[in-house]
Length: 356
Image (tube, rainbow, N blue to C red; front, top):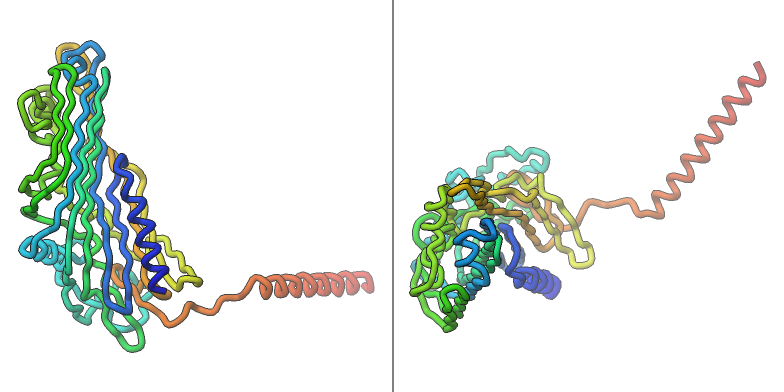
């Protein structure tokens, strides 16, 4: 069972290794035997700025490449900040987190829980940050990915003969600063200014501000570019998004797609939304058309040991075994019997009509 759980986790980690995607993604595996959850939560977006081929931006941007790759381990003080934000989430309302009262309320997802659950404890946290920029004569594409890796405990409780899992933390948002020392590699290439710089770097920064769509002074040196100034100069009203914000997953668990794997004895819940535009603006500047779009396509999967069933909007109960299911062979036999019975009834009715 443990091997199967680790295999699933390794698979989703492999999926997260692809940086050029646009999404807010969360994958979690919950080991009910150890009361431990392994989470990788990725906050991503893709930005596309389009401009006329012969414009000043086209000349200055064409051929530009910017590449940040960095990792960091969140220190103890700021790990506590993440822990506090996760514990303050209850359907995104900031109410105290509670647990199911032990009754079978599977079909009542507005059920108010009454049994307190011990707070989620963040054992460790680390991040992986990637920012990739490519520009040609007509558009600049920016791909931003920040993945938060967490090990958490304190999410399960024994209620009667069942294990109940509190999943309200899944829609958490990190509010305020999340300072960290990023260590990574940096590349900036701009043919127009004749600038190419590549180096390793260490930077103390607020991770939660890495979602600012201005990106600050991209390139970090003379010859770099400040997209915030460019957006503002063109007349765009770009927004800043908290980097670590998963409120999109604040949906009752009964609305998630559930798949039980009997071989591995795991239940996985999937949630997907259609791709959406976070920003879509078009402006006319000096008689030329410019557009700015930011897209997202959120999805999530939650895997737990055993057969799990929602008991409220934010809670899962683990049952000793799944409900008994009728085998395919049994269904075929029942079907044949029904066909024979229907045929006999039809024959009897026809015989009665003939006698009259």
